[in-house]
Image 1 (cartoon, rainbow, N blue to C red):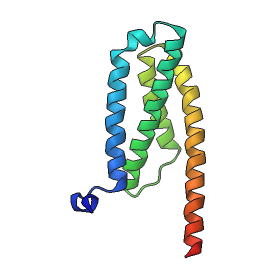
Image 2 (cartoon, rainbow, N blue to C red):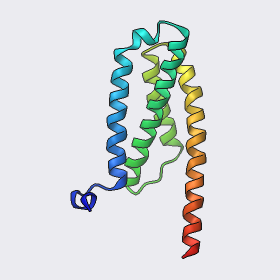
Image 3 (cartoon, rainbow, N blue to C red):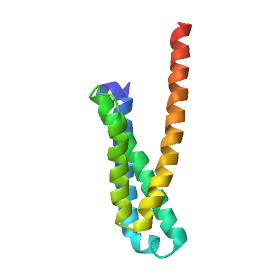
Length: 128
């Protein structure tokens, strides 16, 4: 009831939270970039953190497009990837590679989850 009273939908809240988490994660990554670039393990961690930025950017842009009644596609994925890799490049150049690899894995899992949810929604529609 409160969501309709304030005009905020599920996509609106998701968009807001993903943006806030993106900004917090990016800020923390920048605060600790010297530590993240200090060893191989931390450099890989820096790439993983950047791939989380990819996921948050993908969520934000996808929900923004949903509020505009547009459909998210490969453009959304590419833009989110570019944003995440630019953030990774500020830490260490190896972070760009690990970010790309982790982002591909995250995209695969998000695609599987999305397909499962759409299949579940189709089964519910057919039941009615």
